[in-house]
Length: 171
Image (cartoon, one colour):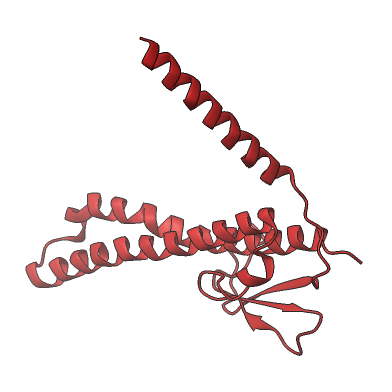
């Protein structure tokens, strides 16, 4: 019984240390003399999405600093912009979110394409009506919808990463 109490005390001390360190990291605002980052997301396929006023689904994300002559591609997972914002915990959080969304979109497409391929192959070779695959089509609709919505979240998290970084840059 004594061992269990000592163990719980140790766990409590460790948890309080971890909590205080993570709270300090979340609340910290590091001021830096680095240059401001400007992010631009260019939509290279324009269309209107269901009367919502938003257009485009495919974005080409670029960033630039004040000393750069031109802009650079952010990268598929944000790896080219990450070294510029790695010192800011809030920007790093948004860059991690950007990377997670990029991986999620690829996983969604990786799940959807084989399902659609199977439906097409089975419909053409066995002459079965496409209505026999309603369950598979519904299963494929969820990752398709997620893959369509992710680019908007990626664009938003990238701009928030630059905004959070620019807040800490000294004038």
